Length: 302
Image 1 (tube, one colour):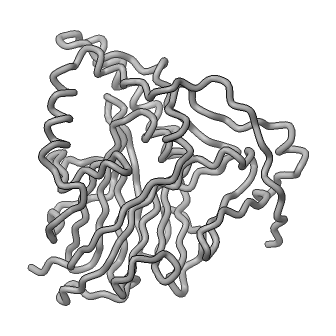
Image 2 (image 1 turned 135 degrees about the horizontal axis):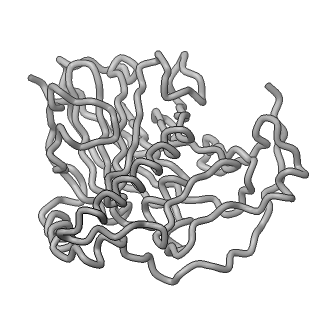
């Protein structure tokens, strides 16, 4: 299919707060906020251990099998995360609590790069980015609409559950694509329902905390579960490209530069007539700026 390269359009953004707003559940649930801060303080910035995945692991955007526990909290990306493996797959489980970071992921995805040679560079690595939501059909979580969960108030919990379910339905309907580079025989853009050996899912809980899960077949990575291979990995939040208008597809080339193309069925006129959809009251500098970090992982044997 032929694509047309276009020049990015610039937009003026008016309604952004200088600082990220606390999630509404934090207004009442100060104990939960204390617990989250304590979890962060106890965790390393980069995961230090190899880990076998739970036998009941399921890629569903929930942390049930992990008991909502993680092996690292990275301050650069502002995320909790765990890398693990079994004999068949490598897994990345990630969670974002901060309202700005959640929307940053919704707008730009999470990009995992794996370099089997151990080199910390992007060109020779395998890269997987999810979710890939078309800029013509973005979804955001707006803090002003989030119900507050009030301790001891069953009605507030029901309202929060309903809000969660509605947003998970929207998220599921729109985050149906994964971008892949560096794997021979796998298309650049694949469905989450693919048969290639890559699975991804994400969901909110009723406090609108976002959980992301990814599974990659070790065969696609040139690895085997019985071989303790050591590799370098990078977890990047690319950020939201403010120059790309609705209806454009953004692709990062081999040099790491963003390239914008018209999405199928979208014209230049469509882009000029549709200013970008953006969430309100996020930390703009964090929202649009890429952040990343490198680590090393060795496959865990039984």
